[in-house]
Image 1 (spheres, rainbow, N blue to C red):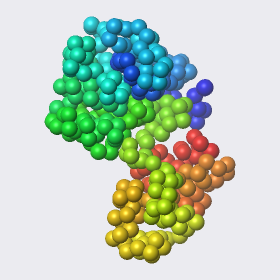
Image 2: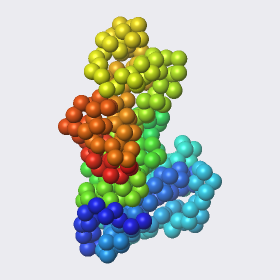
Image 3: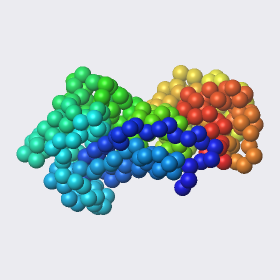
Image 4: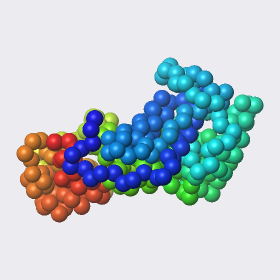
Length: 339
């Protein structure tokens, strides 16, 4: 796929390519490895298409090397763990199920954790995807640091490593040279942030466009579409309010109207939405309006002004603010990418 003609050329890559060392182990989650790999490979593709040297060298490594089987049953061929040469590079640790994660209870696990700890001292950046945060924590690297993992594993990480400041709802977290990311696909968000750090925003946006990703994903890792929120409790207040709001999104609405539509007090409406979907009435309304605006901008010949009016944002200025706050892109950029 050639670079988009309306995208500025990517900045010159570093003089020496950045080495990416991606660690896997038996039972690793496939996308934890292949997602970040593809981001860095796409950055190489963008540079190559622009006539520039490739900015990344990608290494898949595992204890002992050879074919390593993922939890999906698909194997990847990895090189043995390097003993030297990682200085200045970036280590990325993939995640896996709790039974697959390297443990200090076995000789192999202890050896791998020692390698991670030793390597982190030499690496310029030490990262994890999903439950890979447990590996960094078991190697003693996250004490006193902010970190994130898959939202389902947050309680376990807190319980097992109380000295780690585990974040509730983040896509990825940076604390010094350590970067942790949330569930599975968040590894691509983390990798995009590293590309932006290395090559600049223009290059990272080019990679995001090539992969049809957001440069900065909206919200936290618990985000779901409003439709999925409604489906999660089909007989609940969330579904009822969603159905009432959809045909009225272009109107001026307030929480009193929403509560009245559900025959509830404002206080009860807040409580029920929090229980069912962990959102407030205003957040649900904003999410529905954003989804409608995105849908409108994906239509041919739809203008930003008209999308703002029909989605209830009122003005282009308000829509731009909402897009930048939630998606990290301008409405015009979104339209150019997806229309």
